[in-house]
Image 1 (cartoon, helix red, strand yellow):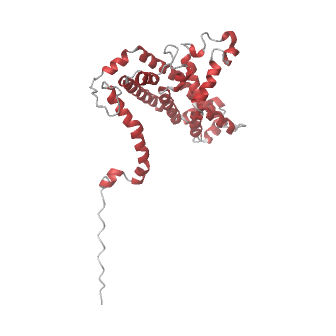
Image 2 (cartoon, rainbow, N blue to C red; image 1 turned 135 degrees about the horizontal axis):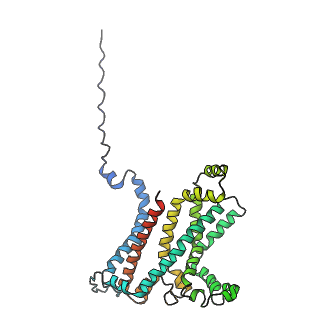
Length: 314
């Protein structure tokens, strides 16, 4: 009787604890290729946004002024002096009031009109593709060309005043301290409408069609379906639209600069970014302009956080 010897089974390889990773994976993550693809954009963000923002914060705490290239000048630390100067300036305070008025008009109008138009363009209507392109054209058109059209419409002898006749405001739209900023807000809403309509159109593709069919079977009308299905279904897109419109509105510069000749009349349409340009470039006070920018960034962040909390709550 013979016996056959069997080789011992190889010992299993030691398994790494689930929570432990190698040093390379801790640095580059589980997918280093994703880091490689994201690196160029991360470098772009750091060079174009993070570095200038950090420099602006540093300038806002120093007595900073422009000097000849290569010149060694002393720029002493002044603490909050630039911020006290900013808060004591009535023109700066007025610019923040102006941009608040702009946002109160522009953001709700953008959300309501963009969602309504996107819902209409998402249905089977004749000329749908033409209308989609038509709404997007102003967004990609140069602001200078569009401003020329609005100056023609809303000037003293413009087409709007000719149509209104005796009902036209006096002084006219863009030289009226009460109407200048609302007109600019409507202009910006119209110009950027196409971009936000596209965002809502993309969001509407993810709303299940079965919900509308069930609502129709239950006897719900179009308005009820819009309120109970469309609005909740595109809530993430609404959050994005509100935040983007707030950021874009807070950076308002081109429209008041061109439409009202630099924020007129008497600063009634001046924005903080326009005042930053006037203080920093025209008047040579970049430290005060940097302080305005830091305050504006903090304000936009706070407003965006509040909007997100309000819009995303259950």
